[in-house]
Image (cartoon, rainbow, N blue to C red; front, side, top):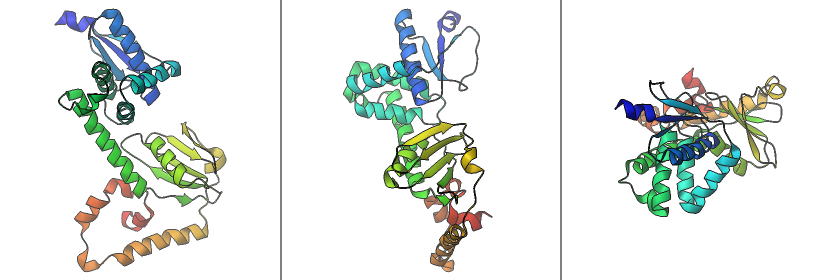
Amino acid sequence: MWGERMNKKVIICEDSFDGILSGVYDAWVHMNENKGDNIILSCAGNYNMELFMEYIYVEKNMENAIKVAKSIRKKISSLAYKNVYMTAISSKECKADLIFRFLKYGYKIGRSVTECLAIPEVSDMMKIVVRVGKEYDHFRGFLRFYDRGDGWLQADIEPKNDIIELLGQHFGDRLPNENFIIKDIKRNKTAIHKKNMDYCIFSDITLENVEDRIAVKGSEEYYQNMWKVFFETIAIESRTNEKLQKTNVPLRYRKYMTEFDKINS
């Protein structure tokens, strides 16, 4: 027992898609060198230090991450690559090791691995992919932009999963002629889309040149009030079903939805 624990190696990687793929690359190298299944892959901050375990910290390496990404698409499938991405942006603590173990099966089985739900790693990954996909679909419908008054639209969100890149791409396609910002308050990540350009993701950005000049226009206040009036007008008091409302629009999505401002206050 102790001998097994002493031989275990924990590869610690950055908690990001590229960071996890970099970790997969290094974990694979260590696995081949040690010729055994004694490697655990974990994101920084998602593990508890234990005695008799060797911890190896891996820096994000874009060259290695790209190699892994290409190999997944070529040797397994594009669907497997998509599932790996969706798992990587989830809030699941064990996601890095799950991806590593899923890929070990994937490289052996090939394209059909995504259908092998009898394998725990595959079924666990699919559950995560479904949850992340559902949250992304919800935010596509519940996200609300407001006019900052400086030529930019902004939306604030606090999703459970790191879906800001998906939202940036979606609204970039939907609103190509708009300057907009989507800010993940929880992770301090920001998607910025400039008119007729691709969106960019920034971490720990203060946006001083933009945010210090926030001033909601009177016209914007007018449209925000219209949302509230519309919401209140269509409601039939005698048929109010708060339980159904909470099912269709869960409370955690309402914080930044204009039509719920009065209710939240």
